Length: 394
Image 1: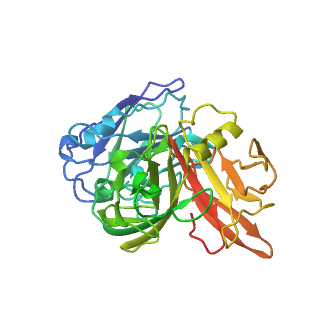
Image 2 (image 1 turned 60 degrees about the vertical axis):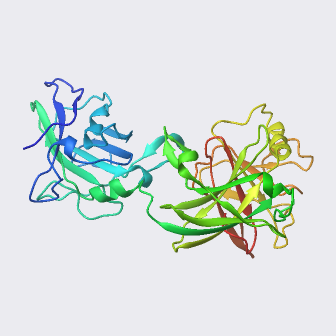
Image 3 (image 1 turned 120 degrees about the vertical axis):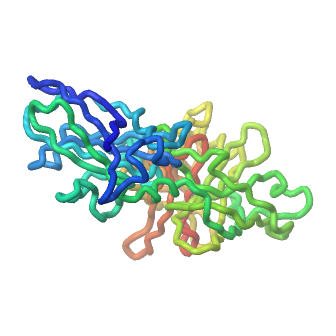
């Protein structure tokens, strides 16, 4: 028996206003654990895609909505009842209504609008069942139905295509061995150990930024604190942690000092149970210098990306041009008092204020090898990108 989970109104033109109802599939195909939403678990945050299209022109939807769905108190699929449909005029004609639910970890934000989630737009559905067919990325739940002029209700039954993928997307289950060292951003030398050293003042953690309220965040709940594993000469941190990394792994470094800002250095996850990471520490004076050059009094809540182009020996490279897909890059002047367009000065330092987390930065090309690194905004943090030949891609 189908149960309506969500009732919303479609604004139509010269036709009775229909309601959209979502139901959960029973046997035989892509059956959910129950057709009652209270009995179907949703343990992790999800993102719902709702599209209303002309079947003959699916690339031009009348409605294309991509909205985050947070877990409710009962951690059940009834949470999708909290989704409000955007009010959009719908023409009087036969239309297709598509609904798909994805793990929030699989959905990124639009490169040109970091406040807007980016759901897949070409989802394939079975003509026989109405449920998603095997594809990448695959919805955790999904279904489609057709609206005909005069219909009072459109019922979209959601098949549980891969419910486990949704409920396991936030589960901490992977054992990973972490080893880490930290470099000084200004000198590019490793932080040293020993008694009363800077290393004693650093909190080093590991984690992966998540989307929340249309921006990337990395809060205490998403971080695992690492222990000091070496007193010198080079300080090191590490340990075995339970963490399910999806796309990126980041070292978060925070100095135990007033008004300090955490720095991130991230790289793509390549698999394996052992991760050797290099983080970056930026002194408060270095962060303040960047803010002064930007004419900012306070650190921006949305975060920013600061990078440096260096040679194989770690020396700043002058005259380098840094590329970042659909993001703006500027360069710290030689006097370190402003940011300009063009290319790196003798400081080798570049910056981006609008790069979305996961943006790939690169330099080189032609007779020089291209060097890549991962950066982008994470709330209240400096994401650091070091572009160095032979260095880690971060």
